[in-house]
Length: 418
Image (cartoon, rainbow, N blue to C red; front, side):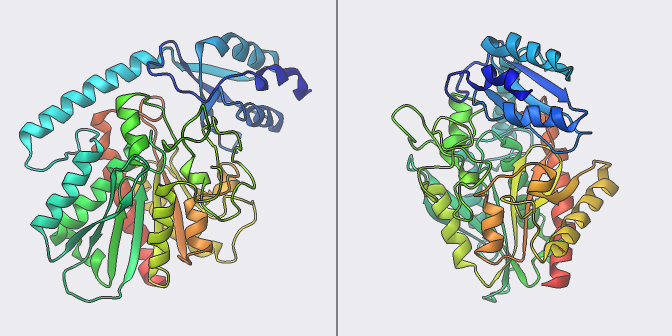
């Protein structure tokens, strides 16, 4: 039966790389049966269809971006099989231009109104984020240090910030947080900055969170891709190192060397989920690998920020089987979800990556847990904004607050056990 939509799977073309996205539509698809969910899973393997969200639950809608040339065939296919759908954005190009204008306006206002390089009323560029880290290191030298952990493929500085309580003690346990593995997930970068702001500039209220624990935060894992989303292609996901003669970039969250390439990753260099020519083929993932390795034994909690979908996910991503210690991770994630629900009413779904969403091997969270022995490793998928990856600037503070609420609660659970 599924053969009848094979024509869609054979559509030619590279992964989405339009600059304007004029005429692109965003669809929500409501699946009611296992067959309908399987149909979407098959369709998601087509590089011309960009599935933003593909949860396993039949109750949860899937969201997909479709190019103008494919829309008639796509709708006819769904209609043929009686799959319910709705168009949530008739023209993504118009929406993205509105977002760009709004963000630029807010950035200019922030530059005039604050002494810092960033605010929480705009999404900031990579250079502004790095400048903010340096400003904090200069203002709070006893509690903050900033290092250039390495360079991106396009030679941008990738910086980490280490935050302590200033007591001078070494060898403490560490919480490691990163964001921006996927370039288009701007709210993840903003969430990491909000955490840094709270730990450093709101230290008096949060000093207990730094007792016996240092925090190492990498707010932009993939600066080349992030800059590309600001200057050229807003929905770009991957790194920017050439992957073949005609295509650029690797999905950095399929590039870690733990069950690399086994499932949920593409071998086709133009696909958004391209796993890379080899494990750790990207300088950005090599950098994260080395940072985590250097923390082996001290690292107690690895948290990676993504968007979107209101999920708190833990290993494994390569199999539906659960690690022996899965209850420890579940307890931590459930504490975070409960804290957000009590604070703002927002609901987060908790579970292993494969069982809640889909199988995807080569992720940083699996690697941090299984190889670098972080006992708690969690992927936080922040909420959608607009129709997916572009929250309004007015939503930054709310999502930052929710992220911070979640992290504080999860940190407390980690401290109780580790």
